[in-house]
Image (cartoon, rainbow, N blue to C red; front, side):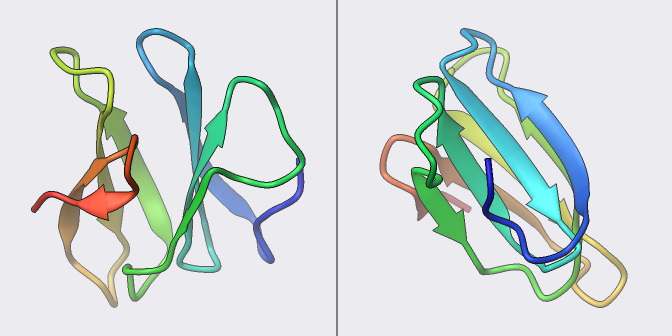
Length: 87
């Protein structure tokens, strides 16, 4: 799978293993479907630093939390069915 332009900092499967989230030093968060297409389902560019922290909600499979590095200092909550930021 090719998507990030720099090193991958984190990978995390959803609880159902239907989606894979990847965070990179390129400040991108990518959501991949389990069908392993060659392109990510969503490329999210909201973080201003490397995406080093990724966690799926244990209560709702389509909710993902991501954290940016030092220059970003934000935690964002995503709907991985739509690619939209929730918080």
